[in-house]
Length: 250
Image (cartoon, rainbow, N blue to C red; front, side):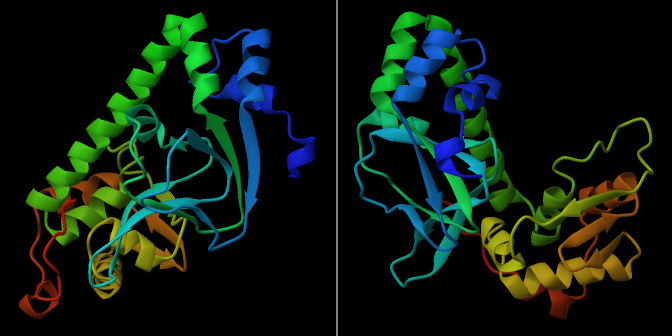
């Protein structure tokens, strides 16, 4: 997809944040947007950069991360197609408090603050949708902190695999396939685990007949059984559990 042929107003119209705007309003917001193609490894922004916009991933994948004083990276969030990031910082008037980097070839839409303010002035419902969006992100952050503080590494991995699966659906015994969007090391950092621990949990779950692994394809053989296994916090051998690091909570 080439940026020059990309219809920005049309794309905005399918995003929940903008889909109530009329064609004129969509064109006005689009005028304050920029498209940017990123190669794998390109930085979107660095911690400390000034923030005058927020961002939407059109295609590709972006990670939000921080670096510890000794240079260790902690992945805070993974942003996929159709999802946005940076709204709260944009309104706060402070510099970025973390960094963002493309994990794959990515097409990114940047929405300028002035365009957002104009949209809010024209329709208060737009402001309510932005507040709802930021509230959902805050709720997810609280859930993450809860998981880091109260859940074992095993439970975090199971929770990640089941995060979009209908555990209480019509057929909880049905199999589902999860495709890991990025490498295991990135996901492990997102869960505050070492890559080695993350891989060993996956292989233990496979040995127990709960999942099947084919590179980045994880087939969950029964969402119900996997959920019950995670819920009861089934213990692992002492030598296995000992490699789980302490949680790092931001």
